[in-house]
Amino acid sequence: MTANSDLVEQTNEYLIANYGRLPVAMVSGAGAKVWDADGTEYLDFFAGFGAGGVSGHCHPAVVSAVKAQADELLCCGNLFTNAPQIALARALAEKGITGGRTFFCHSGAEANEAALKLVRLVAGQGRYKIISFGNCFHGRTMGALSLTPEKFQKGFEPMLPGNVKVDYGHIDAVASAVDDETAAVIVEPIQGEGGVNVPPVEFMQALRRLCDERSLVLICDEVWTAPARTGEWFAYQHYGIEPDVLTIGKALGGGLPVAACVAKPALAEKMVPGTHGCTLGGNPLCAAAGAAVMKLIEEENLLAAARDKGAACIDAVRSAGAGKVKNIRGKGLMIGIELDCPGKEIFNACLGRGLIVNCTQETVLRLAPPLTISESELSAGLEIFIDALKE
Ligand SMILES: Cc1ncc(COP(=O)(O)O)c(C=O)c1O
Image (spheres, rainbow, N blue to C red):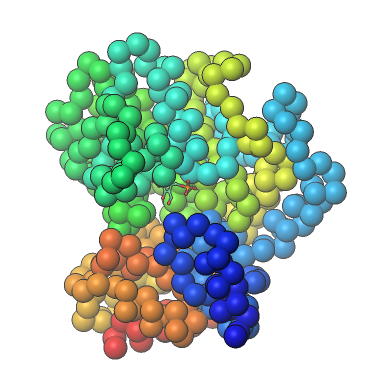
């Protein structure tokens, strides 16, 4: 029995089988590389569903911030404040929503739950409907799941009342879905799980205008897209708009669980003591990791890196002209390659040659390497990917 197969067998014995896990156990990571228990090396072009993805695996700046914090204080509870969470919230306010105030939690779904509760407080009695979009993804907790497509809801009904789904990118559909009970619209500025769908600039701008005209809260779910992945701190910045509420998760903690719901001050002030909470949210350890991630994005110029390396990926795949490719889309280092056939075999071929990519919506292959990936690692990964596409 290999080390991998032993760990897989134990996983099957002791863990709930809610994930379609591959028979591989990861043991270490550095930058854009990870190693499994049998010693096989992989180039990681997906970085744990984007969660370790901005800074790469075990970035030295994140590791040293975590080690230093671990020696000082791991947790103090939210009746007290702590410096790392202030540093992270300040960085989010400086780079994102003007004057934004932050609530910290651990996952994207929880950040969206906080946004949903905030909307109820802001909208008041009688306004409870939330508009979300076809092919969206907002998480697996009951509130977030209610917003997410029906295929994820099977077996868990009934959902929260007031979910209204409309086609992504169609402002007329949104306008006709709004009524006196509508409280908010939640949108991914670029859809991730839905297949890396980039809406037109005009759509996002019209959405902002509509929300202003009808007094709706505009929530941007940037759990996949932020920080920095698309070449801006937040993907809404590509459209020249600002949401009222912003949710962030995945890559924010450089691999540690930290997520945030950031709101404009006038909305944030509705969340008074006792209305919401998260025992370990904003704990000093995870917040220190998040603050280190925000700092290194600036210091290592990772917005430009996302743009330049993303353009190089798109050029390489496009000029390889592999026959199966129907469409290439994305921004920065969040790239979707739509095929005219299922992507599973190409995913498997890549994995067999030591490259981790992702396949979503059956036909869309996603590339999201760390923004810190070196030129030579990027070229090596693209070569494997293009070979697999051609076969
Ligand atoms: C846009 C978006 N929102 C929310 C979530 C849920 O995040 P988490 O799995 O951390 O709860 C995801 C997860 O993929 C996501 O892509």
